[in-house]
Image 1 (cartoon, rainbow, N blue to C red):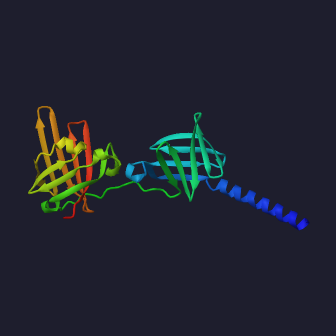
Image 2: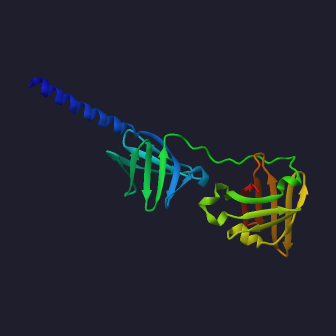
Image 3: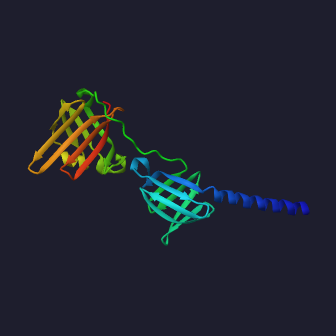
Length: 237
């Protein structure tokens, strides 16, 4: 009987130790890895989303989202996590090394590994006019200094066709609507292509560059108020 009681006590102690380890395992910094919406997962870096969650041993936390910090407290109950700040509680779960924060139909998955920010290749200075020729589709877009996967925002999608030094942009997004499917003559100089149109006080310019990884960069600028960059990959025919 004594041996049985000792064994039961040892098992209970082991369970308490496992629980403590699980509790402590969340302490540290977590990085936004993917964002899920309507069943589609997108890399956080591709959304230009830089979010970190730091869980401290004293049950306080700091969440830094795009440079804006929020402080609060956290509790854990098994695989469930509650983050409370300014009288608002956000529920999260922990499984397989991932913390998931659910907000309606959108979920953010955070892991221990930092996600490198999306960085586009540098322009080529010796590109030829022939390299620009062909059909291109949008892979990434940049607005206000934030570069995201074009799939994450259909408004960024466009098809660019360059043939005989002329460009046509089509699509239902911003770039396609701006160009209106009109054939645009391009100037080629120093490895880059460009076009500028001025009508009264209104001006529209397009600047194209071939990147070192083979992608095409197209910057559209309207006056002084709108600047949109799309990065395109070439369609293999």
